[in-house]
Image (cartoon, rainbow, N blue to C red; front, side):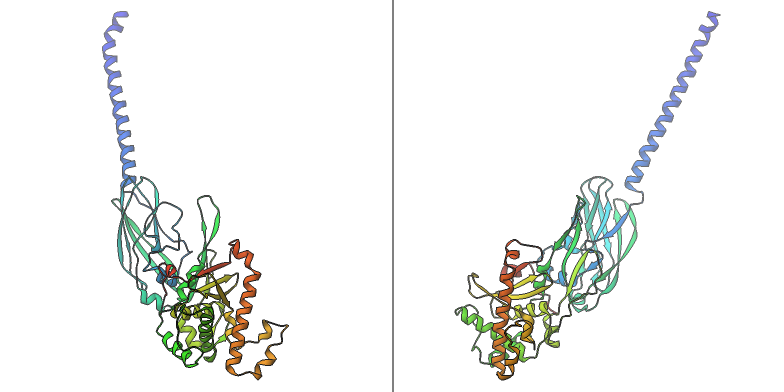
Amino acid sequence: MEKQKQKKTPLIRILISIRRWELLLLAGLILAGTLGYVLYHRLFANTSMEIVDSLGGNIFPSAILATAATGETYVLPCDTPFVGTPSSLIGVKVRSRTRNTRVRVEVAETPFFRRSVSEFILPRAWTEYVVYPDIVWNFDALRANVQATPVSVVVQAQVGLHNVRERVRTFSVRSINECLLGYYRTFSDGKRRFIDRRQLSAAYVNEDNPLIDKVLREALDTRIVNRFVGYQGDSATVVRQVYALWNVLQRRGFKYSSISNSSLSSGVAAAQRVRTFEDAMASSQINCLDGSVLMASLMRAINLVPILVRLPRHMFVGFYTDREQRHANYLETTMVGNVNLDDYFPDEKLDSTMQHRTRNEASLLTFNKAMEYARNNMDKNAKYFQHNMVGYTLFPITADVRRRIQPIGK
């Protein structure tokens, strides 16, 4: 019996050996298949892609025009690794496959921008990025857009060696008259915060507008001042120049109009309707923001430094009375129209005395009262400005501001 077992032992060993090779071969095939599957899905499998932005699907022409030549970014990129230029506003979210994954993004033409092709390299492997392709804006079309208009943005991309299926998203291109005041952004800690962008109101201050020369000529014709000298005179000279501007707007019959609501319905972005310089001059209507940027435009044109004063739900204008910018006066611009002074100073019964005054006397009275009212407003809210409370800002339109925010024109 023992001899028979010994004779069978080599055969059994061979069979066992063959089975081991089969198992090793099977294991090798499984490993190769797994590696092939992983490699295929990293390099060739379908890649997800999403068109994203930070303003809830809204595009603000005023913000684009204000910063196109300055390179400033007033809308922060999405809170994730990104490449490209966030000022393009339209982003594409993709996931890299390997280190230094190459990405090619093509954005189709729309009435508001031309077709563009951008290429990027994503440094980290298997990481979600937002890429911001170059957007070649049609600035004339943006400037001419006076009503919110839907536009379909079509994007194609190649991630590594794989072509991603085309994506489409509809955006709302807002009116040129809508000023972006700010937007809500969710950070990586999960908290949602409001990003204040009220400084973009400076884009509606347009000291280069060709209509200004005519306004200044009319102001000189009143003989209130013989010439505009900026800060070459004393503070009284500065105030008198501002009064000359005020007077000519009153002569043009400007009326206060409280229309400021935007059609924007968004839980992300906030905006306010603002008349451009041309719109205000053509309609002779202003609200508090319109009047402030209109007066600021005229002040900048005569080399004064205006100040946009923002309070919650209100704005008025200030101006430095000295070159060193140490002293300032303020002006309630809503009083430039045919207003009832008793609404502003109910205890003084001023309106009943207006009929006995000449046009210039009445204009000077309202100008002085507008400065008094604005100064009282500043004093009443001084503590909020000192502590930089939300909604309370003083924004001088200086040369440095102009390097960051340009007039949008029209």
